[in-house]
Image (cartoon, rainbow, N blue to C red; front, side, top):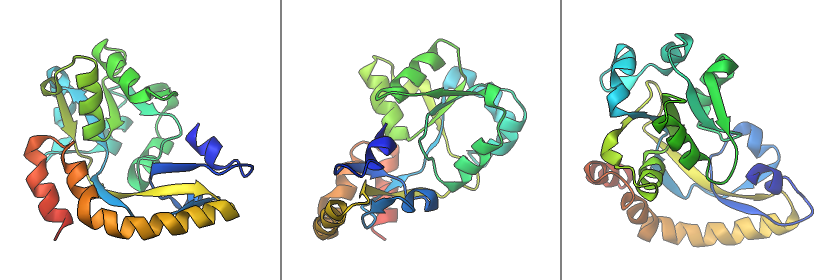
Length: 208
């Protein structure tokens, strides 16, 4: 839905939380990087961890090997980019092993499907999954976040706008504001949404 609106050249539309990809950059305008966020990973229920342990090493999961095993059904948000490594792996996955969800509350719906046993994991940002869990009365302590082997620890998000003259003007103004905001407040604001155990190391890394 967001990409459809951004690619509509008849009006100005912007998305404040877009990952940059070479494909998207062909048709959309992107701001400067606005904040580094912890990369997506697998959200699993702790009671299901035995399914994933054979694919774990040093606290990270071999995502390609897991999906090649056909051991699980995986939930994804339709048309979302998760970064180069994850996107590339998903392209080769048996479509019967994927459950793609559309809609504004896709992550919340995937969380419910996981709880009901219809899927065993879904890909998400950890703060997003924690927030959705709390909204639904699910304790985040019931969930585990599994980082993916080979994936960068952090990804930059951008503001993206329609590729129009109005979009170019908007991006110029956004860049001007972001140069100040990303240093003064955005990193601290994002850190508030992290698991408390992650906050100090995140701030230390991004401010280094």
